[in-house]
Structures are given as C-alpha cells and as structure tokens.
Length: 297
Length: 266
Image 1 (tube, rainbow over the protein chains, first blue to last red):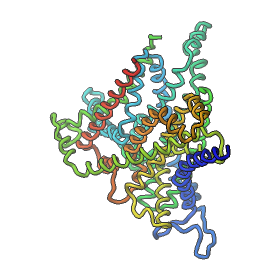
Image 2: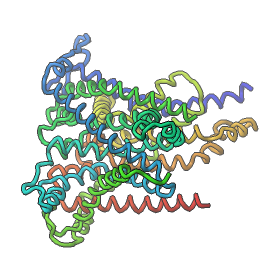
Image 3: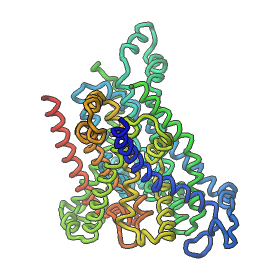
Image 4: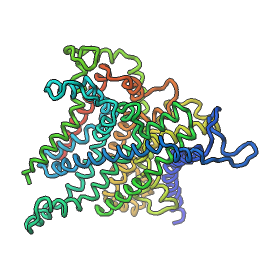
C-alpha cells in the first residue's frame, strides 16, 4: 500500500505545485513589488526610485506618496470622478440591462438563443475597435450629429466627443453585456408561478415586480453591478479615446504618471489606492459568486 | 408566456440598436472612398487593399497571433491543472491562497496587472539579467497569467457538474491517479478545454493595456498599433480593419451556432 501511495502523492504535489508556483511568481510577487516601490522616493536614476535598504543596510521607506495622494486635490477629485462615472454607467447598465435580460428570459426558446448570442457577440470583437466605433458616431461631423441636423432638431453640431458624456456612453456600451448575462441567468431560473400567484392574490404588476421579481433577482443584480463597476473604475482606453484632456480617470492618471512623468513610486501608490477602493466590491463579488455556486449545487 | 409588455419590447429594441449601430456604422464607413472618414465619398474597397499592403499592420497582426496562440496554450495547461486541483483535490495547505490567486486576476483592473508585471520584470532583470528585453516572451507570460484564471473557472464549473463515478471506478480498479486523469478526466473535459483555449486566445488578441506595459521597443501587438493610430482620430483603414474583425467573428459564431443546433437536434 505504501509503495502504491507514493507516486499518487508525487503526482498530486506536482499538479498543485506547477500552477501554484506560476501564480505565486507572476501574480503575487509583482504585487509585493508594487507595494515596495510605492514606499520609495522617486529619483533620477535607473531604476527611478530609491532602494528599500540604503547603502548602510538600513530600511528606508516613506509614506510621502500616499500623503501626497491624500492631500492633493487633483487626485482626490480624480478618484471621486472615477467612482461617479463608473457608478453612473453601472446604473444606466442596470436600467437598460434589467428589462433586456427579462425580455430575453421570457422569449420563446428559439428566439432566446439568438438573442443571447447577440448579447455575447460583441465580446468577441476587439474592445478597442468597439470603443473606436463610437468615435465615428459621436464626432461633430459624425453619424449622430449629421442625423440630428438632417432631421432639423439642431442646426449646430453638439459637442459630444471629448466630454464626460462620451466616457459615460462608452462605459455603458462596453460593459452592458456584463450586466445582461448574470441578470439573465437569475431571471431565467425564476419560477413565473410566483408572480402569477402574487397577482392572483391582488398585487398590482408594479407591486409584484418589487415584492417578488426584484428580491429573487438580487443575486444577479449584485453580480451584474459589480462586474460593470469594477472594470469601469480602472478603465484606460475609454477615457483616453472618448474623453477630453480634462477627463482624467484614475486608470489614465496611473498610466500617464508612469509613462509620461516616469514617477514610478507615485504610479504604484495610485495603483494601491485604486486596489484598496476596489477591495470591498471585489470581496462582495467573490462572496456572491460562492453563494451562487452553493445554491446551484 | 409569450405576450411581452410593450415596455420590455421597446427596451429590447433600443438595447440591441445601442449594441449594434456602432458596429454597423463602422462597416458602412469602411467602404467610403473619401479620405476624410466622416464625409461620404462614394463606394470603394480601396481601404481593404491598402490594409493588406500595410506591412506594419501585418507584422503586428502576426506578432499578436503568435502571442495569442502561445499564451492560450500555456493558459489551458495551467488553468486545467488549477481547475482539477480546486475541484478534485479536496483540502491542502495553502488552498485559500491558491483559490484567491485564481479568482483575483479575473477582476483585477488591467492597469494594475500591467504595472505590477512590468515592475516585476524590471526588478527581475536587475537581479538575474532576464528578461534582457521585453517583447514576445514578457507579453506571453502576462497573458498566460491572467487568462489561465478564466480557463480555470471554465474547467472548474465543468468538473463540478460532472459525475465523479467514472473516475472513482477507474481508481477502484487500480488505475494510477495520473492515468485516470489522462484516460478518463481529460477526454471528458476536452470540450471545456477547447472553450477555455478559445477564450484565452481572444483575451490575448484583445488586450491593449497589459501588453502596452510589458512590451518593449519594437514589438507592437495589433491592438497597440491600432491604438497608436486611433489616438489621432477616425481613419478609413482602421474602419476596414474593424470590419474584417467583425466579419471573422460573425462568420465564426454562425458556424459555431449551426453546429451546436445540429448536435442538439440529434
């Protein structure tokens, strides 16, 4: 028995060790390095930050970068703006995505698979090119302004490109499928008899929706909102292409701080603060997904 | 339940229009003869021809495809192992950390992943001299790391839904656990592995932010090339490139959908 067990153990160990080591080296260690550099001072050298231990071997760390982020108004506003824009896009995705998911879940089975396919299809087309498509639409001489002028609604093109409005539309457009899919998954499982029962017992349609449908769909709503909000917070491409020079979202600030200003310690601190802001939603998402897995199992 | 309220139908129509009008407009404008991307100058396919003669685009596309194929293959191997470990191996030391490291890349903002990996590669270069230059290998490693998480999730849900009795029977009959995995488990989860590979491949082809961080001078992937051009505004040849992308995806999905319907019908 002992001899039979040995290869069994080795096999197990190897199977665990390979992905474990990979993630440890290429995922966890890099985070440790971000943290280390966020505690350093920027200097003009290669690499452009002070070492954690100075020449005498004494620990040399500083919280200056974090203090700067906390006291500098521009950064506080940028974080706030990122939260607000990502939040607004999440709300619009929910307002649009809930009725869509509901409609798909209640459609005829044949139509349902086609409607779902049409939700998933944009995922497979390059994200960058989908954002790019909006540049053509929102332009001063783009399709939307041309159509409105042709209809006589406006005589001057409305400035839509390079505004926060454009970022808001871009975020909503890009992340709408992330909202529809989890909502569809919960709504599709829902027992329709419950709504009918509520209505038979005299509840109005609105009442039945808020008292029956909405609570039952809560898991999907939470998952959908977090799946939109979390990536929207760190978005770089959308504010860069659709937003104006003043539309600084945190993802873009981080990128510029690193590549344009070459301030590696500050860029690392920006990343750590962003991560801290996202810890609560990320943990919520993982909780909701494990509880989801338990209820289905 | 066939009667849908008018409100639901209206939102559905609006939602799909919202999702597809931008794509349709790109395709329409890709056939625009005018150099000014927003003014209609008659029907033409000249931009497609110019695209195919543009060496920069072709080089970038070739690099992207090589990175995508390499990272998808590694991600499928590592992700399948990780999925197996999470579903079939029960408890072991450090399991919480392991499952945390699997799920975190799924939701990590790309700017953070990209920055952390770049700083890691720079430190590593200072310590051991590798990677002496950033490009193909660093991008492939970065893409493998974040897409293996997606593969692991797909494999995990497939394994969780699968009956364990076949594997147990093979084990009871004295099969070595490694042989049981290769002879029984892997063939059963092969479709999930294919799905995982395809997802990892697309994720890699699609990524701009992480690749921008970890690539070096002289190696631009296709998204990096596109981004450098569209930063300056709408251009007709990128319209043509986008339309080609859309065409490939639509044709691929129609084929996948039809084969799925056929297998369902049987």
